[in-house]
Image (cartoon, helix red, strand yellow):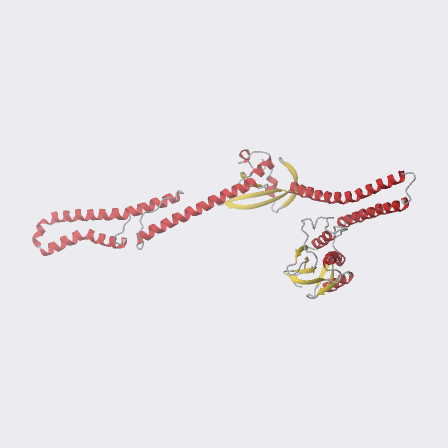
Length: 445
């Protein structure tokens, strides 16, 4: 009940005193007026009735809030967190107890709401992801399967639930303890699958989780995109060369058909043949570059001094000045020929960028530093900056007239073969570009 009078403990104290008051008053009366002893029985009945009435009232006033709290706790146990105790007074034992029960109910309501929202989100994610997720109970019977799992097993989820792993052809997957990549055939398709198997507990019982990813389709999609990019670039290069060759061949054919031939037919024929030869040479270089990318060997590691390698590469570029910024003395195991070629390509790009803007008197900077378990080799130019293209690392794509489009790609392949990476960034201090070559180094270096 909502009591705004005395605190519950004070009221309980005075109520207990009131229950004992009739008996105490009767005893005092007998001591003062002995003549009342003749009416002792009637006095005893009166005291008993009054005491029982006061005790009954005390019982009701104490039991009612306790019954209310019992009902609140029962409702929370049944999952109903909407009920609240109405006692608002704080500062006594009963008020504090009701308040704490209300706070507990609100906390449980918020937690259930969060769990419900999380489960709804998880259900949507499970239904949308293209990865089969299946759980089995301690008897290896299917208890949960998402839409991708149903498609993989070529059956509706309602028909699969409750069946054993052996009945749906997944018994061998549950027998494996480690993650595996396997060529496997399922009712819904065959190909290369990654199968992950984990165990967990639910309601104190052992359960098992299977996650099956179809790698074949993703690999096919990536392969198709790679082929499309390659064919687009190859087609562009071949069409440019063949169009020029065909046009010149038609010109020479019409020139030879003229009778009599023009006086300068020899010079025109010679120039046309030179053009055909130049375009054929360009196509040959183009194909050699493609072959170089396709035949990049595995790195042959040996220990070298990084400073000597960088200084040797810097001496090879003579079109612009190269400034070597010294870094820490470092010896590392790499394939020096491949790393040298990657640095030559990056320096050549930087030098050509400088020649486009500031000319041969400009400087290209190259330096290195240790950075979180790797060495960073930085090459900085003063050229026009980062090209506005997402295809810089697409084979044979180039933004420079006469460029081959394999320099950056080859540098990245060399870096990745060593466990590193290559990236391009725009300079923030002056116009220009930075090429970053990251290579891993052992922790004790």
